[in-house]
Amino acid sequence: MNYFEFQKLKKEASGIGTEMYDMIVKLYPICRSITGDGVRKTLDIISEQIPLEKYEITTGTEVFDWTIPKEWNIKDAYVKKSNGEKIINFQKSNLHVLNYSVPVHKTVSLSELKDHLFTLPNQPELIPYRTSYYHENWGFCIPYNQFLQLEEDEYEVIIDSTLEDGSLSYGEYFVKGESDDEVLFSCYTCHPSMCNDNLSGVVLLTFLAKHLKNLSLQYSYRFLFIPETIGAIAWICRNEHNIKKIKHGLVATCVGDPGILSYKKSRRGNTEIDQTVIDVLKNSGDDYKIMDYEPIGSDERQFCSPGFNLPVGTLQRTSPPNFPEYHTSADNTSFVQPKYLADSFSKYFKVILKLEENFGKFYSKNNEEELPEIDSKNDQVFLNLSPKCEPKLDKTGLFRKIGGEKYNDALTILWVLNYSDGKHSLRHISLRSGIDFKQIKQTAKLLHEKKLLKRIL
Ligand SMILES: [Zn+2]
Image (cartoon, rainbow, N blue to C red; front, side, top):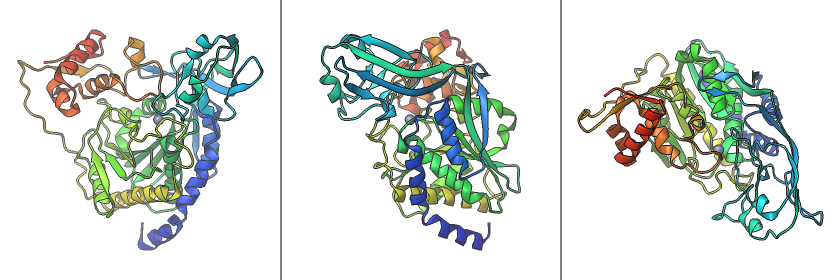
C-alpha cells in the first residue's frame, strides 16, 4: 500500500466508528444462535458491505470430534399467568429464551417453571444469556428481582421453536494479495442480542475487510464470520489442507467497550503477530494490557489447539468475562460506543500496516518456547490424543451442560488438554496456569482414564 492509499484510508476511517455502530444497531435485534435463520440474516447484512461467500454444513456432518447439530429456529416464546398476563416475552428480548430451547407448549406449576428459569442473583436487574446447544432442554432467562416476585399459579409456557435437520451457516471473505501467505481474522456470529461480545467483532471485521478490498497488498487476508467453537472447529476441519498458509491471525471480539485495549498472545507467545500487536500498542501512546495465552476465551482455543498451534492472538478491549455486562442484557447498544469501535479499528489497521511493512523481512521464525528441565521422578508428561481443536468433552460427562456461565472447573481440563503436547510436563502446566499441581495431576489422571491423554513420561 502506498502513501496516498493510506491517506485516503485515514480520511475514510474518521467516520467509521459511527458506521460500525449503526451496523451494530441493525444487527442487535436478530436472534442468533450457532445455526438457523438468525445467522443467515446476519450474513445477509454483512453482505451489504462486502461480497461474502456463504457456506452451509449439513446437520450430522462430523468435524473432528464434533457433529454439526440440528438447526434451531424460533418464532416466539412466552410465559403467561392464568389471568392472561404475559410475564416473560421473547418479543421484548430474545435473551429471555434459553438459546436452543426445544419446542414446548404446556401448563406448569410455579415449582416446575422454576426448574427452567435462569437468573443472576448478583445482578438482579439483568437478564442472563444462557445456551443449551448439545443437551435438549427448554428454559427462560429473567431478572432475579422478577424471579423473587413469582407467585403460585398455573403458568402457560410456549416456546415456538424448531430443532430439525438443517445446516450450520457461516461466511467467509477473502482478499487476495501478492502472496499466498495469509493473515486470518476471525469473529463469531452466534450470540443473540449482545453488542460487545459478538457484534463489535463482526462489524470491526466487516469494515476492515471493506477497507482492504481495494488496496494493493502483499499478504492475502481471510475473514471468517463463524459460530463460535463449533463453527471454528468445522472451518478448520474443512480447511485443514490449507491451514499452513496462515502466517498470522487475530480473533476479534469485545472491541466496542470503554476499557483499554488488551492483547492475549498466541499460544506460542513469541511469533510475529505477537510482536507486531505489542509494538502497535506500545507506540499508540494509550494504555494497554498484554496477557499470556490461556486455553479459555473464544476461537483462539481451536486455532491454538496443540494439533495446529497457529500464530493467532486475540486483540480486544476488556477481555471477557471481565466486564460486568458480559453475557447479560446490559451488553447492549449503550455499552458499546462509536469512539471505542473507531479506536479498535485503527489499532487493527495499524497491525495490518505493520505486517505489510515487514512482509518478507521479518522474524517469522516463530521461535519455540524454552521449557525448564523435566524432573522425571516427580513429574509426568502426557500427549493429547485429540489435539486437533478441543475434544467434545460433554460426550465424556466432563463438561457443563448449560453454556454461557462464567468458567468453572472445566478450566483445568482445558489447560491440561491444550498443553499436553508431549513437551509440557504437568509441572510446566501448573506453573503456566497457576493451578495447583495436585489438581493438574488429578485432572490428567481423569483424562487419561477417559482415553483423552496418553502418558509418555
Ligand atoms: Zn460470549
